[in-house]
Image (tube, rainbow, N blue to C red):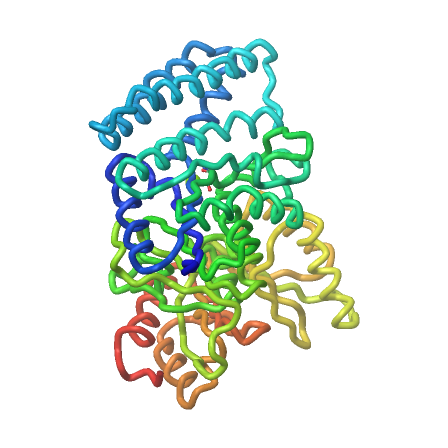
Length: 463
Ligand code: ASP
Ligand code: MG
């Protein structure tokens, strides 16, 4: 009987050393035992992409020897040691080391090229950085085979077809689908595990491209959705999305499920969720995406789907941003509201400053935004439009969860809880997904803990 295909993506920390890869192997094994047919996408071993980037820059700055030293003493040693543990007694240990060395020699030649030209182009960097994933997946697929999981290494450059926008290539879905069906599908249909590099692809001329830093999640979503897998699993080093930042609140726990829009709101607030736009292809095709912890494979993770059940109306997580400014502008003379709002927001658009919240009233417009290097310029330009009043040092706290505050007594409880804090702005997000408060910066963390206690630690809150 044909097994159910699923896509499993392992990030840098989930393949960072032999121990992590042994974990990966046991996770993959248990999936196979459960009747699934996994397709693997892996990142470079933890930090390797950063180190490669560092080497490339060294070579460009005329420090070729130092760059080669890092390849030899850090990158080579890490991969060789990993092979030493994973393939101990396999018999092909030396052969794999030779294969790794071939790749590492190419890396060093590329570095020589960079130091000669003294230039780093995005096109070059894509090729150069792809070695991180090519090294890691070579080891992973061999280790799987040695540990009795039949696996085949695939070359993502032959599968993921992109345009030639180096460093941020755009996938060609129809062409990639054809390649997946040609190359990857026969592998898992024959009960072997295809092992693909995340992040890496190639353009129509066969030149290596990448999807941009952190692009492996996107690779996973592209491959998973085009192969219509039953689910996509993003294996990382945290137990999914948490109810809030655990550094602020030790009681933070895993959020069971999120809608795509809820996950997007959290990411917008700067919560460390994977970038929701990268999993859009999967969500659009109604494929659930799980975020799971490879260090605690038994722990529950977070499931992200297009929609959550309509009537769930539950708070999901609390996110926050600190270091914001609340600025009010009152027009010098009578002017139509909409026109004034356009003038004010125009200043932000022109200076490319993100706006976090907007309020408008008879007397003027209030904008909450991040205090970036453009701050003084923005302020100067707004002074030409009206009288300004600024509260620096505010922060934004947002509770994400579709319409949970519409449930009986919910809003009263929340507001009652915040009675002792100064609230500058209080708003309900556009799609009914986030309830947010602009408070004093010094109060942000306490407000978060306070709300977390109310919403996630006590039973008092109607759920
Ligand atoms: N290795 C690449 C990076 O670190 C891609 C990824 O891990 O998603 O950016
Ligand atoms: Mg990574």
